[in-house]
Length: 85
Image 1 (cartoon, helix red, strand yellow):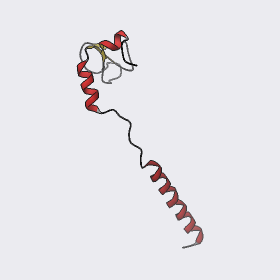
Image 2 (image 1 turned 90 degrees about the vertical axis):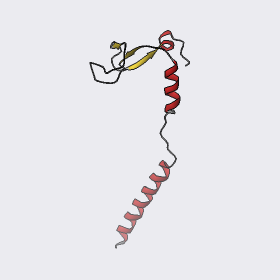
Image 3 (image 1 turned 60 degrees about the horizontal axis):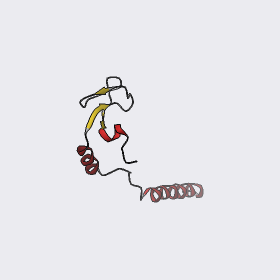
Image 4 (image 1 turned 45 degrees about the vertical axis):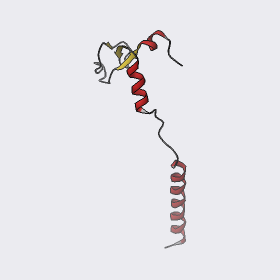
């Protein structure tokens, strides 16, 4: 193996190790699903709407007729502006 190839392999190993070490402690940012589901179950749903087409409204869950995405619930406190943000 030539000296040039040895340097290329060494550089590739160092780049790979750096990438692996940099990504080691990364965890996806997400809320605990049980906590989110429990808090949503306690709130009153006023209607369902599409997040991309807010004029689409339904009284029950389903899909948006415009894009096919799942409709998301609109809760009573979100509609009145009493949300906790």
